[in-house]
Image (cartoon, rainbow, N blue to C red; front, side):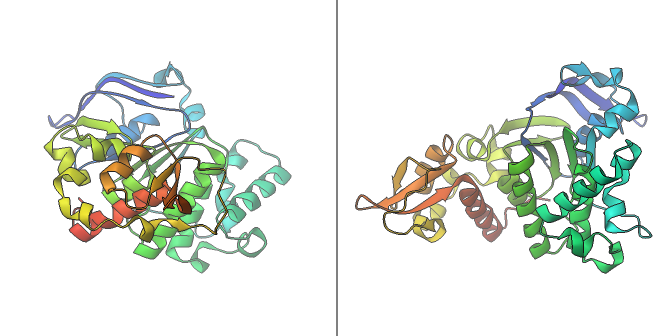
Amino acid sequence: MIQFENVSKQYPDGTTALRQVNLNINKGELFVMIGPSGCGKTTMLKMINRLIERTDGTVRINERPIDEYNIHELRWNIGYVLQQIALFPHMTIAENIAVVPELRKWKSDQIKERVHTLLDMVGLHGDTYSERKPSELSGGQQQRIGVLRALAADPEIVLMDEPFSALDPMSREKLQDDILDIQRQMKKTIVFVTHDIQEAMKLGDRICIMKDGQVLQVGTPEELIRQPANDFVREFVGSPNTDTSSQSDFDLESIMSPLSPGHVPKSAKTAVPVSITLTELVDIMASHDHLLVERNRQIIGEISRVDLMKYWSGQLQERGEGHE
């Protein structure tokens, strides 16, 4: 879907932002880029819609170099969500969401239906919220509208540049859950930049860890935990191999979803014992979205990949290993 081929960026003052980056982002995945400040993650994000031009190398979308696209065609097919919400204060919520569809000459009935569908998707009912102004919404609700505006014209790609970092923890967690719900329904190609490893582990289908303008490792959250490429990655994600206390304290029953006796969901077929260690669970979860949990050969619950990543994010927070 999106390819970086030997991409470098050097600014006129001699600062090197990216060094020979090669990277593939798959269609329909939520791809997270993370690393210390100045590592090049936002530079890479802005190269996708040509807000920043490369010094060397090629960026392709659908195997076509981005320089071959008309710049308006390129950007109309890429949604963009910033940390700064930047809603138009004099326009209603519906009008804010409808900006790009109107530029693309959608019919008014089609726009209205799209606005209401998107609002309903995040629990802001269209009949209630569409005619309100941004000032009547909380910060979290305004950022939700910023996300919907990026999705309004049904783009293939959505870029998100630290979109939730200015929000309070409760609003941030709600928006993270919204993004996961939206992605399950719409399957966009989302490129998400964050400085928060907890957020990355919760959201990412795959995570790209960067440092000094270079890609250190790309992998699923489970792969980064189980097989960190070097000491920097191991410290950054908090590999369980380096923290034996998290093994002894791990209690699967406390994080699983209990099931009624006799009820076995169709989404999960493989069962693991409730006494399983964290490392063993991470290994198995690498190839499963859901697992059943059993005690004495009786199914007592289920756990999903998202449940495991939420647990791991909480462990990182408690150990103070979230990195700026």
